[in-house]
Length: 193
Image (spheres, rainbow, N blue to C red):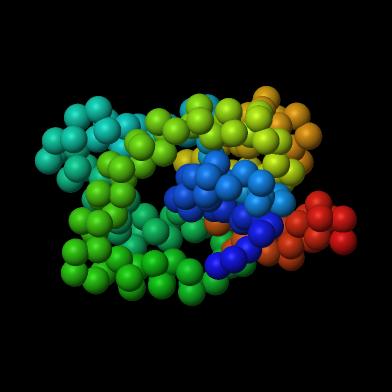
């Protein structure tokens, strides 16, 4: 795209992709904003246990066990878990997720992504080394009640980036669903504007 300098906003599965870009182009990174974006083992909650089992033993039975994550009920739960007022969560996000996941073969792609996520965890130490070496300005905004990427993962950034700004919001994993305004304000404040 010809960008000489840019900030990254990374979230969930996009975090390892963004960190790979940052490691390849460290001089171009002006800042990183991470929303429930993990790069530390302690940030992976118990909800990862069935996925970890699939990583260790990629059997058909372990793959099938993960289908429970792909139901409309599970999607709704992921959007609303830990949200004090679930009426604040628009149905647009989880309905659109369910619509796309209902396409033929999409469930198999998602199951493949669960398995492949182990390659991201394998890069955690490399991501952490990048943070220590290049010290990008870092803002972590986190739903404190997120079930999969725990607050300990946000706090861990300070080990490698002591100047990291870590902010928790009283919400779940999809923090923008309920806290878009406060998160936008945190980014403006972080950028000095």
